[in-house]
Image 1 (tube, one colour):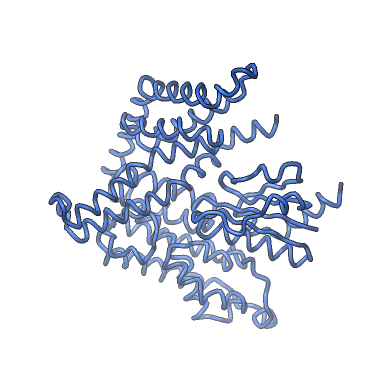
Image 2 (cartoon, chains in turn orange, purple):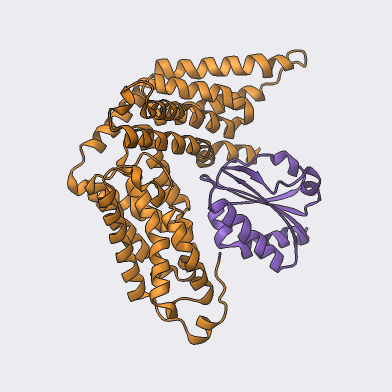
Length: 349
Length: 104
């Protein structure tokens, strides 16, 4: 019983499960649409039959599934496969009433809980087969759909509009702060819960056609592994042999936006490394926001640079972040004692 | 002892594999037999069969998201941890697993 309650209240797990199934769609859709703009310009897709047109249609198709899949797999996380159908419909309705990803989250949770409790109802054996194939899918889909259309849809849509207005009308100071926070969150735990919170927010913003937060997040996530690799090359005496070996691979991880590449450095010396990373990533994120760099793809690192709006300025933001983090690490990290620098130190990788 | 490990993070490209690897290394260091399954964005790799699942003395689940196929481990002792915890504190988790198994 206790376990069941824990499961139901583990909303973070349910949200992240939904997000994990959604990510490939955002990647494919975002990149295809960006490619459409790249080959055809901003209006190229309007000419039927052109490459830009097809890229836009296929990419748009992928994106149209984002919220339904998010909602469907949030419900799946709560109620197993019986949750998927009502969850998908909840996501579809959430889009219909303009409540976006937030409506999708609410709809997915509702659908999941609804199915979960319907499954608990004790029925005579005669009716049991009917529960699974008829009553649960029908009832849960109807109830959640109606709730979204009639009750929850418009208030959530209002929240989404407010959020969007706030994002689009932000002052320069707020842009700096916002970008800095998003960037620093990436560097704080490198793939951990704080990083994923910022990343999930960025994904949600993509679903709302806001492309600047994801750019700030990605650049913030790229800085730490690259900067630490450079620092390890510049000042090998400050790094253990296994860290130095890891530096050969970490920079590629950084270029690919796999922030986890910095974990071995950070866990070996968190007090010096993590703050240095956070400051560099904050600067990179802030610059990206201020420059107005925008990114439709939620992943890919340097390999999606051609798809970034204002790519040159984006590189400037990245380079600035790397320069700052590298400098801070080199300045503050102490030389290792001689024997440690030579022995194979234990590094948590 | 036999340890079954399953890991899954939300993006499923890096942390999932790092968690499985660090737990596997920590367990092997102590001389345990390890089955380590990853549920990343490309799907399940090194899948643990029902038979191996039932032979495990303990199951370590490192997850930020829902794990597929939990019914395999029915009746087994299970430890659940977060992915970040598994990457950073693998040795402690293996110690905890040893205590769970030997302690009872």
